[in-house]
Image (cartoon, rainbow, N blue to C red; front, side):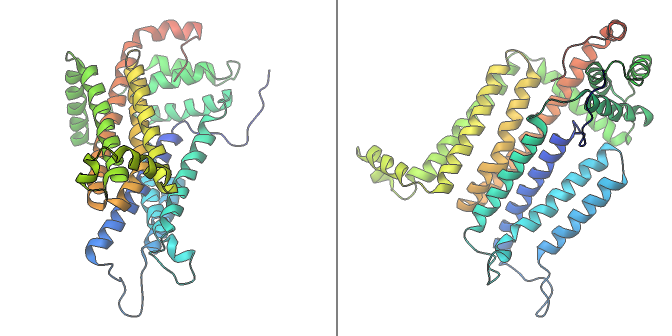
Length: 372
C-alpha cells in the first residue's frame, strides 16, 4: 500500500541542531550585553560610521546559510548552527533600535521582545518536531542520512543501531529497505576517523565516564546534584523576588509572610514568567529523577531539557537583574550541558554495543524495539 507523500521531510537531527542554535543565540545576547556594559558601550567605526553588531550578525547568518547549503557532513551542520545562533543573537540584541523612532538600544520593553522571540522559536521547534507522527518515508530518508556516514568510513555502533531502528519503521516494501539493512548488518562498526588528537580526547572522556558510571552510587550522586542545584536556583530566585529590598529586619519580622504574599500579588509579568520558567525546569528535573530508575538515557534527556530551559528562559531574566551572577550561571549551565550530552552519547553507545549480538537475528525477522 502506497503511503501519502509529505512535502516537508523532517530531519531527526534537527531538534539537537536547533537547540544548539538557540543556546548560541541566548549566550550571545547575554555576553554582548555584559561586554558592552563593561566597556562603556563603545562605537565601532569612528565619528562618522557606526558598525552596529547587527551587521556582524547578518554576516554570520549568511555564513551559516552558505555552510548549510554547501556541505553534507555533520560537523559542518553543527558549525552552521553555532554560527547562525551567534548571528541571530547579535541581530535580536539590537531589536530596540528597530522598534523605536529614536533608535533606542536601551528601550526597556526590548527585553520582553527578546524573551518572546526566544519562546516563540522554542515553541515552533517543538511544534514542528514533536506534534506529528513520523512517516515511513521520513524514517527511510533519515536512515539514508545515517548510512551516509558509512561512505565516510565513520559509522559507529550507535549510528548503525539507529539506522537499523529507522529501517524497521520504514515501508518494508520499499526497494531500498532490504539492501540498506543488509549493508548495515554486513559491515563492522567503523571507529571515528577524525584527527588523532580528537580521537584520543574523545576516548579519554568516554573512559572517564565509564569508570564514573560503574562506580557505586553514581545514579544517586547525579540525582542529588541536579536536585541540589534546582533547590539552590529556586531559593536564589525567590530571594531576588521576595527578599531583596525588604532588609533583614523586615525578613525576620513575623509579618514578613504577609508582606511576601502581598508581593506575590504585585509581581510583574516578567517576574511571573521567570517563576513559571523556573517551575518548568524543575518539572524536567523531577521527571529525570523518576526516569533514572528505568533508563539513564531517558533521565539524562530530561536533565538536558531542564538545563536548556534554564539557559533559554530563566537565564534571560537573571541577566537583567544580576549581570555578573548570571554570566557565571551561564558558564556553569553550558559546562553541565556539555557533560550531560557527553553522558547521553556514552550511554547510547553502550546500549548500541549491547545490542550488537542481536543484529543478525533482527535482520532476518525485521522486528525491533521502537527508537526513542
